Length: 149
Image (cartoon, rainbow, N blue to C red; front, top):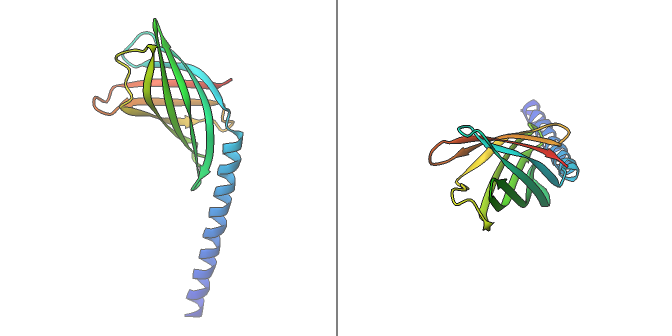
């Protein structure tokens, strides 16, 4: 019985050390995350894409993940569509998911979709994001590539 109790105490201590290390790692990653990204988005079924600019305005580490919010802009032909963005990063796996909301602008694309999310990864240096957009209703996909600037 004492042996079992000892194993449980050691396991609990290791879990709390791991949780503290994970939280510290998430905060370091949050602090190091660039605040501006620029790149290209292209639907898989289209020949041309749009230029994308992202500006992160707030970042927080919570429960071992990094959460960021900000604003973005898509420029395609004559369309200029502004969006708000929310981004989550798992620093342990470098997995990324990003959502766009509230499309607007004087020349917004009337077909702009916010019903889905980008899923992909960020490079270990936090300067490149590669992600695939999947539209929830149709499954239509496109690729987003962003580089810190």
